Length: 194
Image (cartoon, rainbow, N blue to C red; front, side):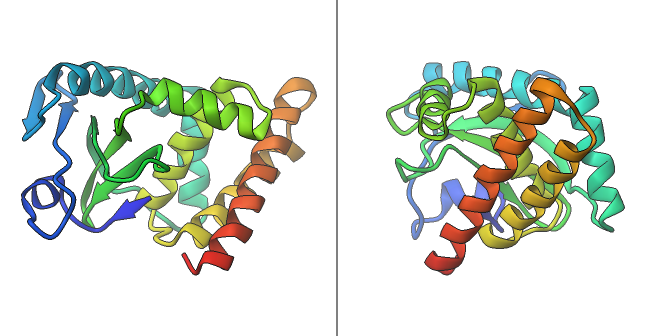
């Protein structure tokens, strides 16, 4: 999911769901944005930050960022990672961004990120680590400018298919599964007009 608002504007907007959130910045500082579940949001923000940071600095993450550049796109600056109540049970994560910077958020709307990942892994019959990679790549796709769900899923499908064509064994199987997930979600997004 993507929203073209800053986190601060979303939290303060009376027309939006009053989400409350905690964001971890790169210097390790935690910012409380009207969180009514501060301890839970802090724990979830720290865990999400570790996952996103590990991905961005991994060989896989570096390859994904390179692919984004090859497509003529550029990531907005990810200035923080957090957790909050995003207002909808079905959302696993979202990016709140403008044209320059963004914050990746996990949804804590009664379930932890880990619980949401487990449910998606079961739904798509893949490992939890595979879903974590998918969710992070999905939000980074939005951060690269793929604003609609359909265009982002198409981009991810193409990326995962490319990775499947250049890998072998279990890694290839993972990318085939990820491409299939993105293809299904693209069809669903087109049907839903997203």
